[in-house]
Image (cartoon, rainbow, N blue to C red; front, side, top):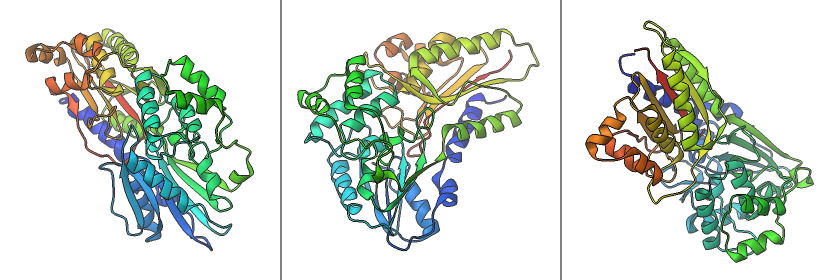
Length: 419
């Protein structure tokens, strides 16, 4: 393996390309209905999905909300950009318009919903008279809590007028077909973008239990709203009878493409799962220990070994630095590897945004800590401050892609070459 960092970056780029909506949306599009076809959507991949839909169907009526910088050219579908991961006024205004667009449909009409990760913040319609500022405070607290994405999204649903099946209920009696690009472990449609078109049997009481379990600080009005219940639509609700969901891209497919490429290059593959969850620094340490154990058992002439994993890790905020779960995973792994020869890794988010920064993730090699020493930065201090992006900026290890226009969550690969 002559250039391990370049090889790992090639695997990541392939994983992203495998989930490009232009490659996958067309095969799942319906025929035009007798009535109106309305295209709606939200998420980091939604504008690209809308572009793909119009490439097959021609100009369509509709509105899609995506992250700033992720818009794509469409002929009929309006693309609105808004904030992620904390919602803003642009997202709230666009969500109100989207809800109005589907509020007066008939049984001959069809709503095509294009949903991907990031939709939880981009679809912003506060429930119970809550304010945008209160929703922003909750989102910021969630992102710092270390709670897994599934529990975050349960809370988000019960504070929303659009999530947890409520958007599909607004569309009734029209038919609703939702195409989903999954960014959640397990690919549960109810959790992707907090399931705006998928029923949910969770309760506001369960949401309050999540608040207590993760010690999430809530404004008093938000806590009171949860005690009053919510508008989340149960799975068996008649308004969802004509709602169908399809997951058209998921992390497993992207990991499989990377695995096939690595196998063709002569690597021995060890797949650790596409649905890993947990604290990023803990998983980074654990996977580094696996890599060290593999390296200890290798002999000259052995094939390189590649450890592949996906999922969604979390970060509990302890410091004031800039970081995300992929860079924090990589930083913790670099510390544990301590410059071990022959071990390289990449950890990136397939949407190009790790945490809230315009950085996809990071690369680590045997010389990472030596580069840090030359740059005068301390890896343990950076980890303590949650400043993984700052650390990798100093050592030249950042991976910056710009908008990838898709989102199948984390991609992690550790390459172990024989000495």
